[in-house]
Image (cartoon, rainbow, N blue to C red; front, side):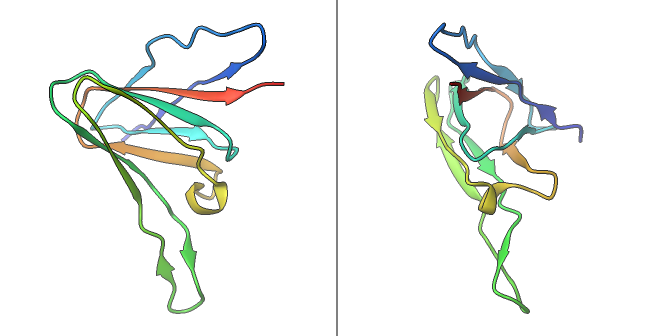
Length: 116
């Protein structure tokens, strides 16, 4: 599995064209460098709902540790949804990446950051 690296679009007062997003495939999933402030636009291009899973690799308490449950989100058929931000303390892996899985092909994602 080679995860798709999502390009982060920065919104400024000059404006930005976020386009239609990047297609995320079931076989690959996606990732992005997560600063804890980025939000995502999820666009379902199919006629059925698709579940998107945001991995939470963190654990709490000592031994035995408790895994933090992954966050799932269902994107309705032919709909767009905005979700985020994703605090790094819960969602980042050891490389400060947010890992995202999709239950089927047909989701386009756009990562949005707010500029200065």
